[in-house]
Image (cartoon, rainbow, N blue to C red; front, side, top):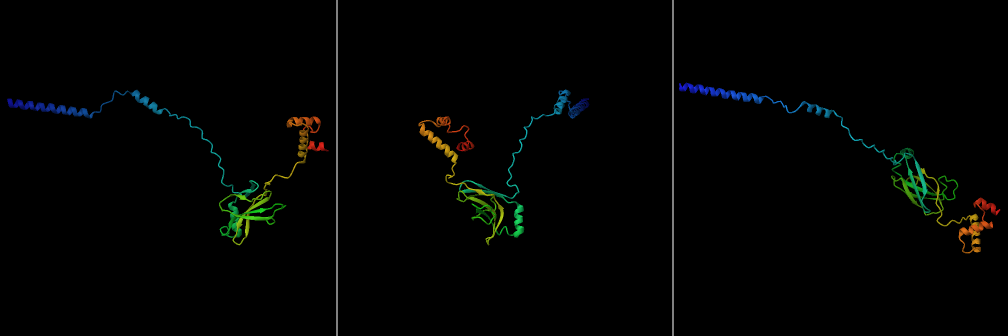
Amino acid sequence: MSVSFTLVLGGALILVLLTVILWSTRNKQKKPVPRHVPMVTREEFAEELATPVTFPPQPAAKPDMPVIPWNYGKDRMTLMVRDPNWLFAYWEISATKQQEFSNNFGHDAWNNSRSVLRVYDVTGVESFNGSNANDFTDISINDYVDSRHIDMERPNSTFCVDLGRLFPDGTFITLLRSNIVQTPSIAVSNLLDEEWMWIEGIYRTLTRLHMGSSPMVTEEIGRGMGLIPLGISSPGLRNRKN
């Protein structure tokens, strides 16, 4: 009886143990439902995502600054006077002009010649035609420059400048010709305005008559004496003389 009872009790314990193990395993496989998160939270989160995002207004783009072109594709040459001794020339040679030179004088003519500024002294020449200048001076320049200060040291003179190509045999081909300019005199001009000299003589006479008077007082006295006409001007003075 004792052996049988023991076996029965052992079998019952094993059965209970297996039941507990199976129950625990089944509970682990089930996923718990998160009941602490309400459905309202999901709806609010979706509404936040659906709200369009706004960005601050961007400042208006500034218009691009105008760009001064390096060249204009036009053949031109301009001569200016800087002072009684110096000239200034600037120019532009288009690709069309260079191609025209190569067509007329050969494919290698440009490389076989050098760029030269020929400065003509045309003082007293009524109509300059390129061959009737008083004299000329050649100045070699680089092919890639487009301006030059020219030291002539000839005040009160008239000049014209050609930009051209000079061949080894001395042949000069003009590409561009400038305008004609005249340098000012470096001395005081000897041209005097006789009408203003006449007025100056009146002032000197009045000054001798009224020593110590200011120019304004002297002028008033002169007007009162009838020596200086009212509304002074060159035509008035000329009529006063007559």
